[in-house]
Image (tube, rainbow, N blue to C red; front, side, top):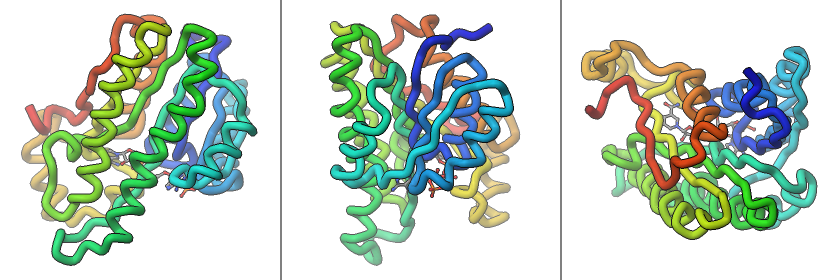
Length: 243
Ligand code: NAP
């Protein structure tokens, strides 16, 4: 069933990992997808896969942590119905070793990007009296993690942003929710040590790491009309790790 037919979505970090699967799933559901990564070239594979499925997609390059680049991007893509703020980075290290640059880069790319894109793209959503803003947070933003003060702060910030935008934009028909993934098998988690991986699996009731599709399915639901009365929520998708 094409639940998103006629909708246009913008997905950041759509070149690989979770974002690529989100872009593919939204396209499978009928949305036209604007795929964003650090370069348009990096989005070519995602766009090609969507096209091969018979879907519609375009690729765009922008550093989403840079306000001038985001302004250009918004001019390039125009109005969208669905915004998925998924792009993110880690610069993990203990507080005592964390440079201000490590702190700022993570906050800028993971959190400020969502503020910039929501600000720019909610105006046409308000006019249309419809919009879906979905922020990809993390269980680390809810629970914290040693060695990830910058990342945890950025992901907790996304939760505050989500709840505030839900209150501010609800009267205009715009919902804003966050998805907080647990450990998902992507480039970001490939560096986990064997010991950490085993520990996570032991504590996960579902007994496996997540796959990008586990997150994409929840995001497609939040983007759909079926989720029209859901806003300001943080959905942890972690196989039960933090139950
Ligand atoms: P990933 O495989 O490392 O991919 C990161 C994506 O973000 C890439 O598409 C990358 O584009 C893009 N990106 C990075 N910096 C950017 C910038 N400055 N401007 C534009 N795009 C940028 O990451 P992932 O594991 O799929 O994670 C996706 C999101 O889920 C992140 O927000 C992450 O924090 C969150 N998350 C992941 C996990 C997990 O276990 N994997 C768990 C919880 C939350 P390029 O290809 O051009 O570099």
